[in-house]
Length: 134
Image (tube, rainbow, N blue to C red; front, side, top):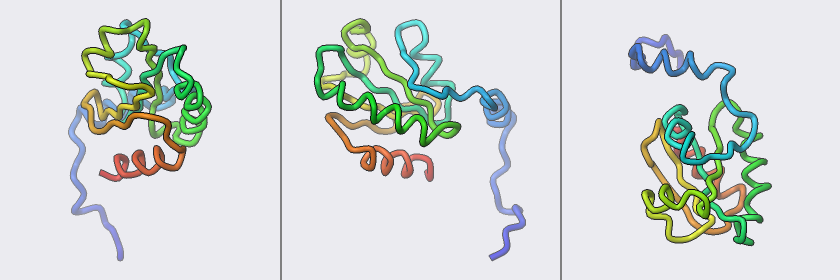
């Protein structure tokens, strides 16, 4: 089937400006988040994943290399961040984090999905792919 682009939704100016501002500005690692940069981080990207964790949490330590791997796989498509819930209890309370590790997915600052517990790279990839295709 030929696609001449005549039925595609035109992007408004703010969507174009958002995309232009992201060119070459995607993080190439899992960004450490805190009260100073959390809101800006989740609002900046079309899709971001935040890992809510704590240093004493063994399952959280299991997820750290998986998050690094995912950030490498999805560089330029998804931004990955991690928030220490022990140091940032106010943000954890704001998002009603009841168990960790907890992964929250945001589209330009709006929570669109979440999952708790140790997850395989494949499970998280499946969720990301579904969100990217919406």
